[in-house]
Image (cartoon, rainbow over all chains, first blue to last red; front, side, top):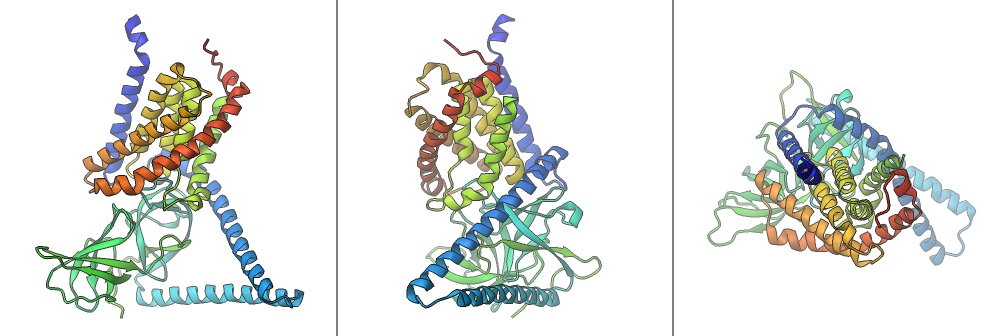
Amino acid sequence: MSKLYKNRSIIMVAVAAIIIIVIIAVTSVDRDRISAGESIVGSIIKPAAGAVTAVVNSIRSSVSGIAEYRSLKDTNSMLNEQIILLRAQVREMEALRQENHRLREMLDFKDVHSEFDLIGCSIIGKSPDNTSSIFIINKGAENGIVKNMPVVTSSGLVGQVIDVGSGWAKVLPLNDQRSSVSVLINRTRDTGILKGDINFELTGSIPPDAAIVEGDDVVTSGMGGIYPKGLFVGKINEIKTGAGRLLKTIKVEPAVDFNKVEEVFVLKHIEGLPFGGEIVD
Amino acid sequence: MSGWIIALILLLNIILQATVFQYIAVLGIKPDTAIAIVVALSTFLGKEYGMVIGAAAGMLQDIVFAKPVGITTLSYMLAGYFIGINSDKIFKEHMVVPLAFSAGATLLKYSIGIFFNYVLGVQIPLFAYIRQYFLIELIYNCLVSVVVYRALYLIYQKRFLRYRLRIKKKR
């Protein structure tokens, strides 16, 4: 008994390790909802992370504003308060113009993909793990978000929802190495598979006889049932056809800049309408 | 009460890691400050606290950012435990301590991560993985660990953590 007591910490760590391995096994399979415990932790992290992200974004924007102002001051010492005021107004108008542009693009998107409702979300935190590009968004189950919903910006496809909590959800972007999507080369109609790689780039395989060229548009094929047909993914920027290769390897320049994206839209399919629109030129 | 302080440190850390620390990436690699905290607290408080703190830090990160949940939990828990085992045998003041322990913890984290990814069928180009992530993070974690260790050591020296946790100083 005393020997058992002496070894209690080894027993504790072994038991804990077994429990964790069971958790890994349970959580690695597909689940519709995360557990209550996970949901609570997420609800604690979410508002804090959201607030810090908001502060960081405002500091970032002010710092870039100051840098811009200084460089202008250097080149033109005649700048006075009025010009600063005008510049502020111009900046405000520019922000409004960009917002207008973004909303207009979303409207265009909505016109093309009318079978979806768009749920606007902000990114509130990104994975600290260097090998992962998973991020969390500020909306969850009560906004109608469920697992496997596609996530887009006005530029193109971002990824898919992989876990949903209350008020937050985890998104797996396309450029994560665990991500893959069935795609279609818009011009030639060849299909292939596009995956994220360890450089967080999009690498894909296309049949060897495909007459693709650099710059061809890549869109989702609609196969797999997660992403609807016709979502813009990016443009081919590299094609490799080595001797003995069974498939052509392509690299795709994503339409979305995954490092800079701050706002995304989750696509909620409207019941009764066909899943997936026509291919956009 | 001090358990609350440790919980607060871990919570604050995960929030900073998810937001601010995204901007201090070197060659695309962010430092793992959670490892630095686990290394420091396990060294000061021993294996059982190390194990619990490691598991808590890993679980937080897993729940919010990972799928499946548990891989980081397991690696940080084992790291905390193994560091804690050795905590009596070393000079805690020496700066080699955080360097060596965080190198070991980073190695353990990557080994467990690669193993489970392999088991779960995620294809990993091993050498590229080591070159691109592991080596850079190893160096970055070691450097950050020295700073974090120093800061937490100062708090520990003030007997703040120790007394609140009712841990007797080992002679």
